[in-house]
Amino acid sequence: MSSDTDTVDERRTAIRTRHREAAETALPEHTDLYVGGEFVVADERETFDTVDPTTGEVLESVARGTAPDVDAAVDAAWTAFDETWSEFSAGRRQRVLTAIGDTIEDHTAELATLESLDNGKPISEAKVDVRGAAEQFRFFAGIVRENSGETMTADSRHGQVIKEPYGVVGQIIPWNFPLLMASWKLAPALAAGNCSVLKPAEQTPLSALRLAELIDDVVPDGVVNVVPGYGEEAGVAVSGHPDVRKVAFTGSTAVGKQVMKRAADTVTDVTLELGGKSPVVVFPDVNPKKAVALVQSAIFYNTGECCEAGSRLFVHEDIADEVLDGLVAAIGEMTIGDPLDKETDLGPKVSQKQVDRTLEFLESAREDGGEFLAGGGRPDDVLEDGCYVEPTLIEGLDHDSEPAQEEIFGPVLDVFRWDDYDEMIELANDVAYGLAGGVVTDDITTAHTTARDIDAGYIWINSYHDLVPGLPFGGYKQSGIGRELSGETLDHYQQTKTINLSLR
Image 1 (cartoon, one colour):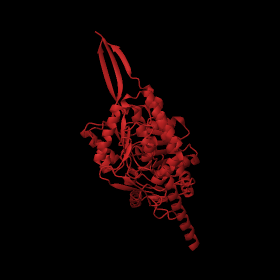
Image 2 (cartoon, helix red, strand yellow; image 1 turned 90 degrees about the vertical axis):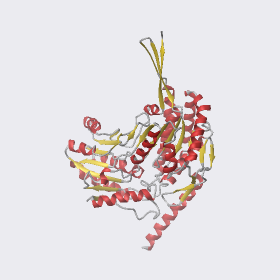
Image 3 (cartoon, one colour; image 1 turned 180 degrees about the vertical axis):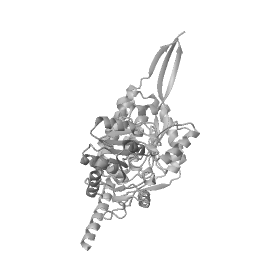
Image 4 (cartoon, one colour; image 1 turned 120 degrees about the vertical axis):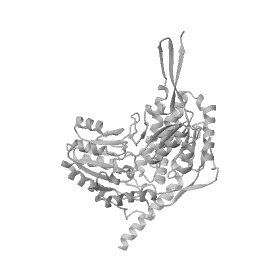
């Protein structure tokens, strides 16, 4: 027994040492506010700690922005817009966006390490995020010049319809994909000709600050401003600021509603990418092994901290036993541990608060009669101070139960067997959310029929999580307003102006 204990202790010590050494090289040099092209201290000179969720150790103290800091950032953004950025042609903006993408790619290893330290995501997934961030800037660089407007002549009138930027936009991003979500917001905003005040999540502010360092020589001063801080302070100030002409938010539905209410006071345009409780539907014609691999990825990628995670499995009863047995076996083979280890499949959740929230849902599932086929607690062979939750598989819940209806945002999959298609679709759509869904079948007609019947904004067929620039991403119902990743996103960052000229 003592030998086993020594081995665990040695492994824990090695992880802590690895993270401390990685932090020495990956942490940004500046952790103050980035306003007007400079790093400046917060108005109240307060800071907050950002914590490594793997070890529980403080990574860095970061400037705590508040309303006066947001005011300063908005002023700097308007100055940059009026004096510099509004004069940039589409071609010049294209070159800036391309340079940002190249800069991100050149620092892939460093940024991925930083994401793993600050968020807890496995390093292999963090590298995917960084590459995806670079591609966002390149995609929007590629379509900047397409925004040429329209002209028409009718009834002795010559009409022009042109698109103009809002000027200054406020952008609030979540903690689950810090750098990637920053790119989802900044790339289309800059492409459309706006300047930005970006508020990163207080749990994961470091990659946004490092990005500011990296692009300082690429982007004119004041075009991008980064104000870290708490949501109830800096976030509230951004979403309700009278001089912010458009607000974009990604996060929970509950907070998204608050953002929308504050923006309403100034009649500010909003786009919201919110929560989900996405169904994955498995048909009996598919190979069970294929279904297992897809479902496993759909729910456990990024430790289940994905708004589009496939968190409700509807598996046909003819292959349910095989699929569930396969999932239990696959969960048993997953490596839970240090996210800096390339062999790790499941890292920690972002914070102890998120651990507690997930455990509360698991306890609720037990009280509601759920049968835990796998997981259901915290692993005991990783760091005791780490924010870990076991990958969990639950069957037997009533679909009306809270764990089946609400977004858990963790590695928890609710399972429902079905044999009647219409009843299954009714349940699949019987949630407040409608962000995404998945269909697993080898029949093309079944695939398309089911995709159309699922009440959600993005449907995968025989894949999951692979988001392609150019294909709009966004939700139905309480999963949000607007679309990301596409030319349609560019429209969300522009206003339409009509010029009507009399020819008489």
